[in-house]
Length: 315
Ligand SMILES: O=C(O)CCC(=O)C(=O)O
Ligand SMILES: [Fe+2]
Image 1 (cartoon, rainbow, N blue to C red):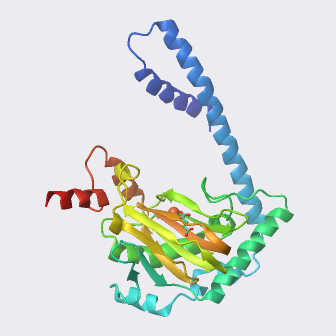
Image 2 (image 1 turned 30 degrees about the horizontal axis):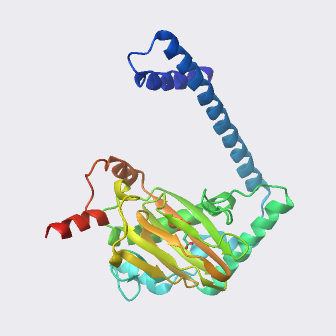
Image 3 (image 1 turned 90 degrees about the horizontal axis):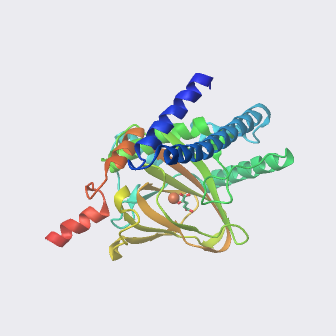
């Protein structure tokens, strides 16, 4: 970034800070405060830039030196996706024998990939993790909630996952979640891993996504169900408890995927034995995110479970 741009960035930050200062502060007090805030802001910015430099170096090392074990796994056209699902998408309508809603929760499941293929994906992930260890590279974890697992987009799966979004998740979203503004124009694809000596569970949260595809890859495990606790807009995510009929439990099955809204609150219950790996694809729509941010105050969209409760109360 050029010096002029840095100055502009700083200036706009200072303008923002200054506009929030109390009017009755003396000039000395204002100057001292601004100096203090500016120092921490510069440190924070330097830290972010350093992180970004490291990430770029990490990704370019992988791109140059990592050689996949099974290169066909990285090609969407070679994924043996369930034929019934593909035929249904060609017909452009939902068949409830193929894509099944879990009760009337708004979350759906469908058979997606053969278990043998899921195991090949698990092997490839283990191969990448070992390659990172052998080469002294840090493994970036999927997000602040998961201490294990890997980010698929980091080692060659980005194009394949984009194809999954375009060919599978987006057509399903168009048919099922009509309020989501398409296209789904970006994604974050990663693996979550649970084991008795690793993470056992995942706390209640919403995803940073418009729609999420969650595919169970294996291996053998007990427990680890996905609990759903109601769809909420961003204003009501943490303030309104689930109603009894919003509480749904999904038993993961290898090769079966679950599709749900990012705003559908959920948690992974603790596994009680074995090891579970799931492929998670957070699918985003820049236009839909904007709509979410606009839902301030009590203005709440019709798809929010809290909105539904209000309607039921008034009947
Ligand atoms: O463990 C699971 O099945 C869910 C993971 C999840 O919700 C997430 O990573 O956002
Ligand atoms: Fe999640």
